[in-house]
Image 1 (tube, rainbow, N blue to C red):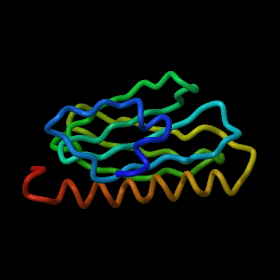
Image 2 (image 1 turned 120 degrees about the vertical axis):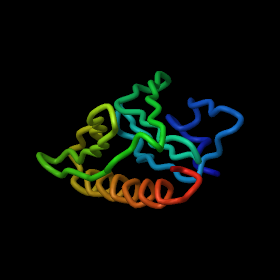
Image 3 (image 1 turned 45 degrees about the horizontal axis):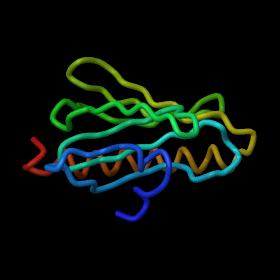
Image 4 (image 1 turned 135 degrees about the vertical axis):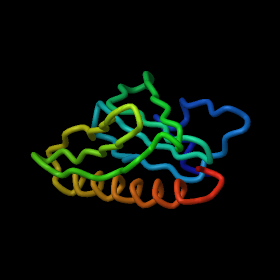
Length: 125
């Protein structure tokens, strides 16, 4: 998958048994904070507010995901993942450019669709 070469996606080292099936991020150059999402055949990985070379990833097993939705408000789109252990949120970094925030919202909406596709497969259950 080509985009995994870009930051922050390239900082995640996937286990050998996992294969990336979808990824999302905003490759804008003017932010100091980045975010990234990677969906594999086994998990969702979230990286929010990583700064340049430092990225912290959170792994959520696909079988734990109950629901995913995008919440738009105050200019910062947010991905809300409901799991068996509670809710997890990924909020995109603020941007003064409205089109960047719209792009972020589209990335999160695509993530919701991709999560739905992967979790509905028999192998993910």
